[in-house]
Length: 420
Length: 70
Image 1 (tube, one colour):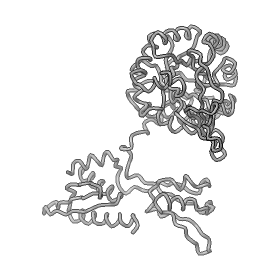
Image 2 (cartoon, rainbow over the protein chains, first blue to last red):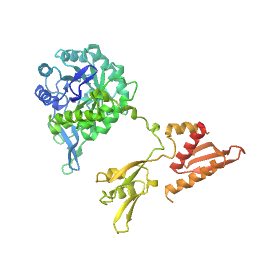
Image 3 (cartoon, one colour):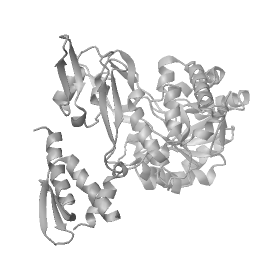
Image 4 (cartoon, chains in turn blue, orange):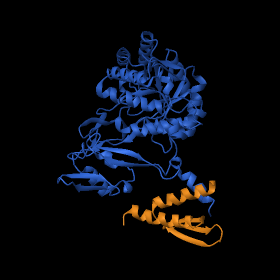
């Protein structure tokens, strides 16, 4: 078996799969149950002054039969007294000394508040701290969570305060509800963060009931925005991880979060620079035992790749991610339709004709059968036909020989500047 | 005319000038595309082409890069 263990800024865990700070890590009972199932770590549900929650807290988007394509919550941080949580953390750590327990923390942006909670939490033996600068609902209205996380100076200052008191590694969890996450990531690094994690949830309203005109979810006829997560947010999260990973000023490890539902998603985040991943929605949807498939799948993948340790693949795809201006304008691909597999549904033709570049012809063969054919010279390689095609293998995007050497937009503009 | 045919027409115009000894002297790009000015290597004659298609604009840019590198 490959070595799946990770060391994220000094926090060690037997595998890269941590439960994210959320309802699944609300109690010692749950976290111990997760560790028994095989999870490598858990970020305890955010600790702070115990809050009051409302009833009716979650909602989900189902899309074309897929349940929980996106998930939304308006639940706040822990509603249990700190002492209760600390006792359970202590007991859990004692029972699982080799698993990572990270305490997620959220208090008002005051130095003494951070110092107090850091000391109390570290006294029970947590392996690290995660500062919740990301929750977008409820707590943000009180100046915490994403309200703090959207202001780079507050991110830096609060991280600094925590580092003044902390003896364990400090992870700063960032909000995606910001134009450029690298700005707040840099602020965290400047404040002394040992690692960053992303993304927290995205501001969202899940829907409106067409009969009652209430929001979904609603609380006695009123709604408020929640935090969106689940498979639908994965591309957003992956980009934010990649942007931070390729930024030379963000020199700390990354814990990737956002729509990770299986081992393949986890590998993508790790290839894009995450040292480990955190998961919530998939566990809420399917239960803790999804970890079994994740560990097995990851192990087989590494074995197939001839990799003995997971850490060897961290960030391997980062050099392949760049700015648009560095992409080769002379690289070409074109669609090819395999008529042996094609079912002639014509979705590709319609998509291309109506919304792309009108290069898929509907033709009739000598035998009277209709077939579809791509005019390769007019195909811009947009991928739309392959995306809408319902049959695997019917449309393949094939690289075509470049007639000119590679030329990026940046190369081109530099050349044009010489011809003025 | 398909865009590909338009590209071939514009490419042929560019190739004709290059074959005849012209080099790209300057390029002005605006909302209407690119106006590429050519100067003959030996005789100093000037010619201008209005290039509209995206592929032809890539094409003359590649030629310009090769010209600069060569």
